[in-house]
Image 1 (tube, rainbow over the protein chains, first blue to last red):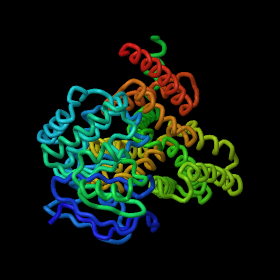
Image 2: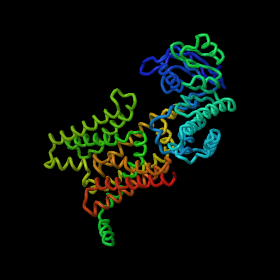
Image 3: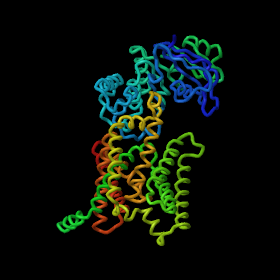
Length: 233
Length: 284
């Protein structure tokens, strides 16, 4: 059974449909890139998978012992975070909250885990620094390290490179690919930058007027047939 | 200097001065802890709105001739806090507009009711002391002080136990929710806490100046410190120091308690803003 299956999923909010009839399945270790125009419902779909909002119709099934709270999430940055006085260490550790339950403090294992996540994202030397003083790329790596504390199975990334300069973008893609290849973490990533994002992906989900789901090869073939319409690949 | 110490020693004999200091320090401590969260969540103005609601409730309680108006005021304020903090993004009317309307509305209705039905001869005096807290901090009974002590202990313990969870939810509500934290429960808890602290703080600075107790220490601490823990601790310390200085000054100089505390807080903010600039310069 796939790790995550969406069957005829219709997503939206306040009863208003944003996208209808989306179906796809993700196996463990897949790297799925979700592309589509602005307002096509990519973020809404992701929030529905995370259980932040309920689907209007259709089903989300999880297999291989994946629990809904075991999905790590890298949201788009919010206004609140931009001037939040917090050290990198404090933020990364907060990713362990989900496994804390009612326990008020972090255990040694959890602190260790946060440390490893910071090393993996190469921000361990920034641990004591203030989040709001970091560059955009460093901030994204902090949030990715936090997501790693929450899960070792599946990561959902919402435009992880938006607003980053080319060097930081390349570094971010490299780190995500490394997590996918070396740690076997399933990746679902929303991206605007179709060309660069699809490079590392194994599967592509295109949502918009028509919904397409398939492997990268199938997708490239599909676009070639459509005569390279407005997808900018 | 010696005279001042002697004079303070003299005042220390009076229980009402001791009560005022104890209650003042505790309320300042609680409101500053909460203030950091509210400022970070962009809810600075909610303290102001809720205090006006509490004023309206107090006016109603006064007209109804209740001997103990605390339960009614607390209940109304908690209800409004829950509604306002929960409404959030999904509300039909934008949060700030709703807050402004409720806040001004309850202020107006409260004053109107007091004017129309009040049995007291000195209405403007009553209104003034509710709004600016003029002397009520100096008229606390032992019962009030105990209530204050118990509530403060509950608040501080709750903050220590829930510290990491409060941090996670404040920093990123969406992520916290996605990873299975009960975000609604924490927001509800914060709303109730906000209401309780505001009703307590009305005694200290009156309903118009409460926002100052909540916001100033948090903003001052954020000028200088860069981690969440340091900001929390610093805000608590600043707030307590300002409350003590303010109360002592007002006793010695005979100035109104509430506004004196707020002025001390303003001075502290200026000091910390300068310190922040200096330390930034030193690091650059």
